[in-house]
Image (cartoon, rainbow over all chains, first blue to last red; front, side, top):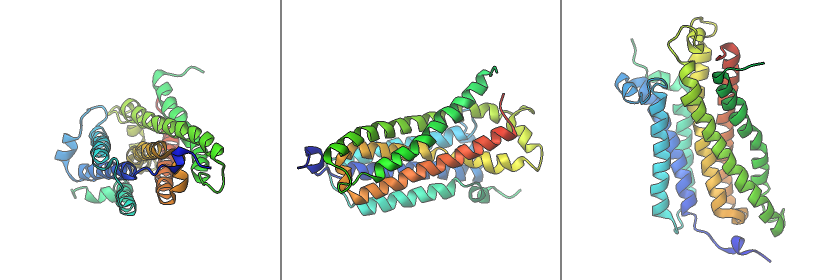
Length: 114
Length: 170
């Protein structure tokens, strides 16, 4: 005997959406970290708070990227089934990039030589 | 045994929010791992699912609380240009500089991946509910995100503890 909540086959679109959004938002945060290392102009542009420094802009843009992409993908894929394996792969690749981009020895490579 | 307001925020950030997240991880991992139709009854699944949903959303909220208090309340005092700020103290000696140049630089960025990953897991588990027990691929993907959330929180927590030891905020 099974319950309705286990029997009903929920479409995987919304879960694929949040997975990819999570990977994307994380990757964007990491990318901003790399770009701030590489460019004084970007560092200045991402200093949304003088007290916090460029971390305020990096995390702000990363959070906007996560929640924004989640909202968009959710509305595109809600009620639909998507290729989950492909979505998960994309999400993992983006997540892996974010881990690399946020590692100091990596983003320090992009600091301009003096 | 008095503590300053700033010390209080630092304690809330690390030993409040951060520690709660790390401690809750094991329970969430056990809950996700045991979500299998062959291991539990329907009644057991329903019972554990409520606890899992509440626990995972609580973890996500706590993780956001950790990074927001850390980055926007504690961090400004850490990085102050004042000679007595922890950052200035750490950078004043080659034997301690890497606590900032590597430790804090890594912690302040990688820590933000924890609430993002935790939110992904909380939403997906809440969306599927007990049906997640039959979705092997989806559960595996969520376990990976969940472990990444824990791993990044561990890195941030570990360096936070060491940096506070090396140059505490008062």
